[in-house]
Image 1 (spheres, protein in one colour):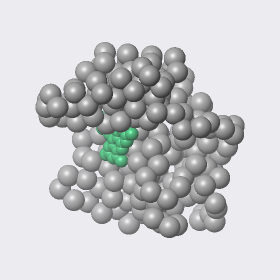
Image 2 (cartoon, rainbow, N blue to C red; image 1 turned 90 degrees about the vertical axis):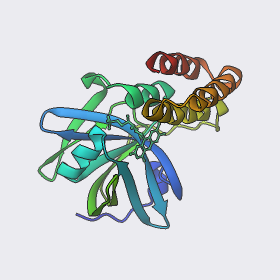
Image 3 (cartoon, rainbow, N blue to C red; image 1 turned 45 degrees about the vertical axis):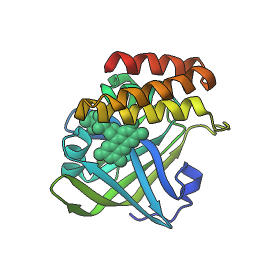
Length: 195
Ligand SMILES: Cc1cc2nc3c(=O)[nH]c(=O)nc-3n(C[C@H](O)[C@H](O)[C@H](O)COP(=O)(O)O)c2cc1C
């Protein structure tokens, strides 16, 4: 079932929104940060080969994009697995969708027009269900954004082993020290532990 909706009501604006994408296949559930790309009212997702999210989306053609400001969730879902107790699931037109309990809001998407290249898939996203848990009013915080950037450089460091990424992570770590709250500082500590 197609829906007409204001994506902004669910936190998804023009450009790339950094969400936690939750997916499932059989009994296994997964969460990972993924960018939802919005150009006007078209939505896409680019998934690089090698992740569980890639495998789940290719097989199930459905995903949930969760909005959260929890820096610890970004770090843990990038480098490890979340606990099963952090998810909830529901039936959506005969299919199971999983989301994050702590999300401020989420949108479930059907993936269509999937294009495969040698290293990635690009899918168009059609919203099929939405949910708002709580409205969060929060000013931009450089510490939180620093954790997000450090996570991205952390994945690059793990892929390549290039020390330049460690320097970048350290630079973002300094911003987290200066501007972040306790959650962002704890998230940064966790991140260093994963590297
Ligand atoms: C903020 C952020 C955004 C990301 N966006 C994407 C993305 O759009 N596509 C992608 O393939 N990987 C993206 N990644 C990397 C994946 O989250 C990372 O490879 C993760 O370990 C995959 O986990 P999984 O194997 O549980 O799916 C992103 C990472 C971060 C921190």
